[in-house]
Length: 538
Image 1 (tube, rainbow, N blue to C red):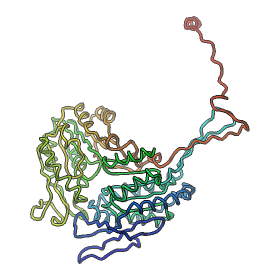
Image 2 (image 1 turned 90 degrees about the vertical axis):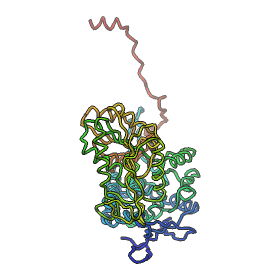
Image 3 (image 1 turned 180 degrees about the horizontal axis):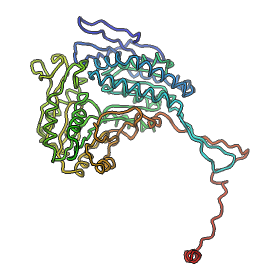
Image 4 (image 1 turned 180 degrees about the vertical axis):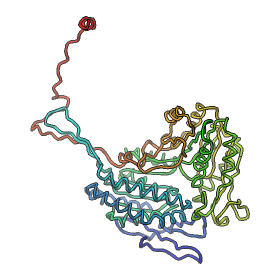
């Protein structure tokens, strides 16, 4: 698929991909330190080795992006979109190879990895068409012989920082519209997915993207290339930051960019509610709750955190959810039959492990005691390498109330809480009982309840009789509260994140016309008394 270098591993292991920084069209491999990314399903397998970027690397990339931006911004938008058409074609041709690499590098089950690549294809196709629709407006003037217009203009240099759980779909949401709008980009991919990032970059290059438009620097977040890229915004080297990751880091980015009077795009965490009312199709609701809670091993910002159930159907929901969770097939993400694979990294494993003690201290009860799968303690349906993989079983907490920490704190991993309520009012109160506001869902047959939930929930996204997870390329994605700052990914709405509005007035009168001052306003008629009007009517 590409011309990149690889390194041979031991017997029975695939080759290691050797990634590189990419700055001003030049591949840079030399570095003082390396990022070694291991397969979370088999940590003997070194998937990617990448150079670890420094603040100086980030600065050079920002300067290269600045030098390329004026030239790229003058390329007509339909011509810029032609690159996206080629990118979509190349992504489609490479879909299976890319999906398998995603599965290997971050542990995403193969069918989900294919969906992730398809999301990038959909995004490229959607924004290809938007290249002919970067519309402004023609606005009527209050003065004669004068024309008013609005235009979308590029912002300039965009710094992009992405997470590893969706290593190609989420970057596509940012890179593709930013580039279409005439910006240039410095991208710091997740250290969990440097190989996927390098493959994606290679496809941009093959699609004909000019040098300097997309620059990539690998590295870590805090104290590394990620933090350096954020600080570059404060130093005026970057005009905008687009970030997907934790709320804590999002706050830091907001502080730095706020001092620079910039508006970042922040797509942050979630503690997403899934409501099941008494009249719901319970079989469908349990299936949706199972997928929302344990799909991708719970490593989605849109994963269900709290399943809020009417007490009249709680026994049925509880029994079925536990039964179905016990039957989930866990194992090698390249196995087409698995329901979920390993955790992405040791950090997520540690956070998930600590959450168990937190829940028990709060007073919650364990219906299903999730634990790490180790050699000799594999569940019957396990199909992976328990000795070398980061695998865990599902965890379900019962008797959770909204004043517990586990009810309001995000935890990346296959864990979910059951919260019992009496009716719709209590369900909405519980659903809005966290500081997050990303995704939400309700299962009910009652159209009035659907309407009430849509109007009352504070989440940026809501599903009716469907999971909390899932996104489409032409629909806005994002949240409120601790889940983001109101900006959105995807669809036409994201264009506002990567363009600035310019208002232009063209005066053809041959003289200076002063708005509001030279406008001839007719004298208002003398007021008529109400009794006189009534008299006329009669």
